[in-house]
Length: 82
Image (tube, rainbow, N blue to C red; front, side, top):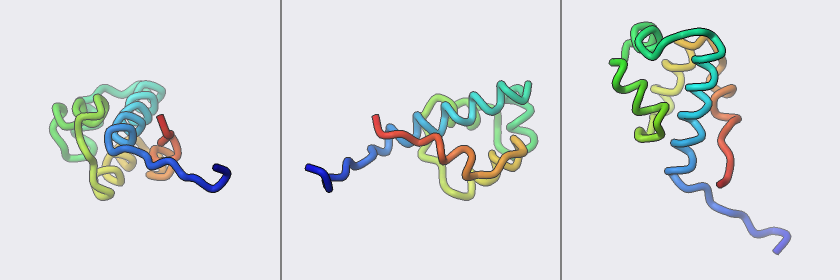
């Protein structure tokens, strides 16, 4: 089993990304409304991303990362296999 790879489910990716966005936002002292305004999304969309309810596109991830003033890779590196 040394070479077997586990697939990461879409739900796991969404939850991990959401967690990374929420942790980063809180660390920077920003509200969901502030991130929404900076990214051009509605606050409800940011809320759904953080809750892992949205399968965010790469473009969305980049816009949110820019709003948080972080590299998109910083959000993606938090994705873990559940």
